[in-house]
Amino acid sequence: MKALVYPAFDQIEIQEIPVPSPKPGELLIRVAAVGICGSELEQFASRSLRRPPPLIMGHEFCGQVAAVGAGIAHFQEGERVVVSSVIPCFACDLCRDGQTHLCPKREVFGMRRPGGFAEYVAVPVAVAFALPEKVSPLEGALVEPLANGVHVFSLVQSRFPETVVVFGAGTIGLLALQVAKALGAFRLVVVDTNPFRLEMAHELGAEPIINPRQEDVKEALSEFTRGRGVDVAIDAAGVAETRQTALSVTRPGGEVVWIGLHSDRTDLSGHEVVLGERKIMGSYAVTSRDIETAIGLFAHGKVELSPWVRPFPLTEGARVFRELLGQPSDYIKGVLLP
Ligand SMILES: [Zn+2]
Ligand SMILES: [Zn+2]
Image (cartoon, rainbow, N blue to C red; front, side, top):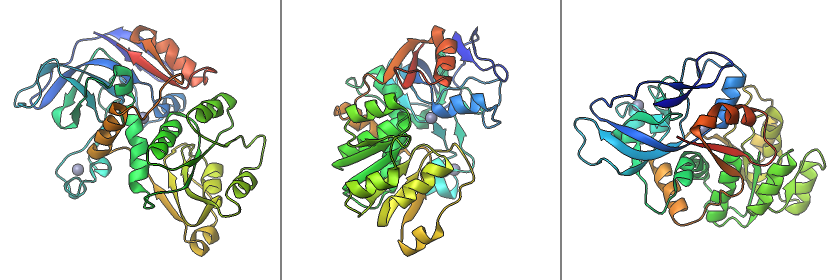
């Protein structure tokens, strides 16, 4: 089969490799579509040891069951499925408590085990979910990132936030924005320095959009909320500056969710946290429930992927991967169709 392989640092190429065979309890998936994630681009560029080569990356994929391993009764050949990115142990205290995404023994597709940048991938049946006919393969590849946006709002305690601001109009930011919209938040603000990404956010319902290179974010949001501050701020950029700004623009008692992982250390105002009782939460990956919710959002037509998501044949994977590293000027998310 063909696979987009990361054989060594700084290299990415199409290779011909053997089709994996499913072990007992695994499904062999014929991949229909697989998204290239920002974390993969970032870790490739930084030679991160979180994804050490040689490796087949790809944790955002859907496809059809091509073979069923021993001991599986509830999936059949030909069924359409989407796969969760995280493979938990299902046995530890966190897993038994439903916190499978935090399992200390978790594995992630395309990190230390082969991912979906290939024609076929073997997956434990417990992380496969039936995909309804009305959800397209392209949408199926976006289920996992959309579920990340769902997970953010599963953590937010305010049931009906009025004003939500998203920092970073990349894939996760634009999907979190659409989750907020589906939840009924009616004032959606997006902050980014890239004019094309801001324009996409605007098309998807963000009003206003704010470019920190052109205006002061705190002033603009203070004016927009008449000095009150926003109810929920989501940092999908993951740098010290946006983490602090997200905190500063949030109203007293409001909630801040960090999902971006770009930098580690961050200097914050402790006074803004304590005196304003602002809550800061980290959001990581997805649970089964988030995946099911994301499938439902697509099935009900709540999420728009055009024109910011673009499909390409797998054979163009290496070129597309490098193109995305340079932030293309007319699309945001690349999806490979093996
Ligand atoms: Zn991802
Ligand atoms: Zn576990």
